[in-house]
Amino acid sequence: MRSQISVQEFRGRVGGVKVKPVDTTGAGDAFVSGILYSIASDQTIFKDEKKLRKALYFANVCGAITVTERGAIPSLPTKEAVLQFLLEAAVI
Image (cartoon, rainbow, N blue to C red; front, top):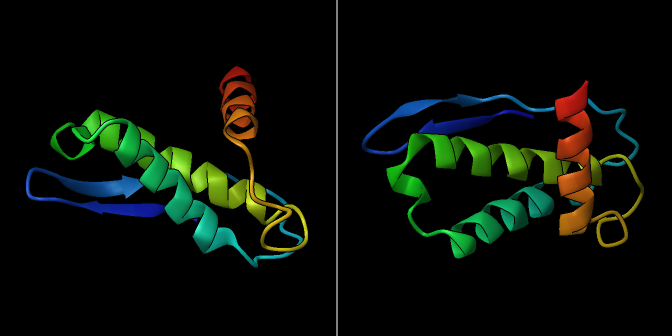
């Protein structure tokens, strides 16, 4: 999954991550939860392209982790799981 940015100041795309999907149920919910978390944490992200890209990538990871397990609710990742995924992806 990749995300598209389109705000007044800038446009572009944010890449996703590759995972082996098991069940896509809940991926959209996880993505929306991830972006809402980022907006609630820093309401200035729409004024800073780097912050917005980072928030969208975080949301993409939320969705990606969710599809690796079965079921919408049991597969939703914790913040810690997303941060661990990001940490491991940065090392590789």
